[in-house]
Length: 218
Image (cartoon, rainbow, N blue to C red; front, side, top):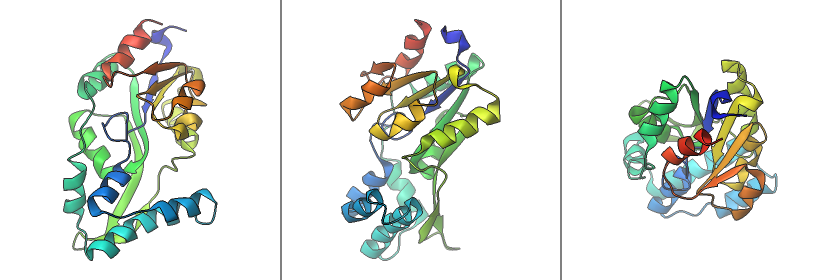
């Protein structure tokens, strides 16, 4: 298969399009809260992913009393974006490729990324606020980070693109499910060395343009 056969590029967000591995953990660190107990309950199947998300937000509210949408956005704006983000996405789109984000991260960070580079589809998780703009301990889950394959299949159906014509780019071990739905998969600055066992290629430079350079050589 040559690079011209690829029609859809699906990107994880945290750690791939950004220089930080988790938008959720970035906020946790700023608020000095620990969600390890919640994560353990989720991983043991004692709570759903929706309950996990609500619990994370409740940690912030319990710590600070009131947390505004603008405060979370301000914190997320500190997260650096990857080198070559806009150039890479714009180049792919200029070649007629569809580009998408599938992320368990926070949608307000995805909104910021979309302001610098337009994507054809963005799926991420949403925080909810009251009428005054303050967070409530609830949210809308679009992406279960352990089951991104479902989102990839939805996007493939939306754009009528086959698995063989899809490239998926991720950095965490949970991106394995996304890779299963790709004709070509790339571990981008992977956080887990074992991820490369499930990918077709690895990029360690942190430069998103190297994705284009890589597929152009195929």
